[in-house]
Length: 193
Image (cartoon, rainbow, N blue to C red):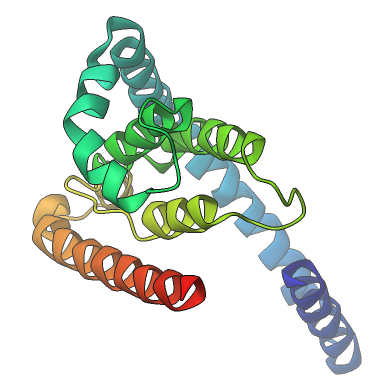
């Protein structure tokens, strides 16, 4: 549905510029923004590679398993339908760890693996299970302690104080996580009554 909306907006903009004789503005915009998009990818690549590598080392060294054990009591309460040693819990913990460091790109593979493991236990393959929905809420509103990617973007944009967003980032993500998980709990509880 989102693809249709974006495609419609693009077509409307192009038709409107053709009717007004401003097609040159569209061409210049496409070319300049394509260049800036490629530059952004090139500038962000070292950061993404670095943190993805660090997360891979943490996974191989067992650090993520230790973090998973620390989070296990909390995750057991959030995901009561999962068995105690479910493989998805480790991936969920890894996803949370990466998101806490503001590394959405490094968190994505763990999130996808967690969803694959949760799907294996899902009796209705065409509908998300309660655990899948809870994980999606947790992942979307995940608490970010150090918004690494945003800090890097602010540094690239020439910010004089790129780290000044840390406190507001922690507060915003904490409020979104608590709100989302509370709503998820209320809806799940009503559904199970």
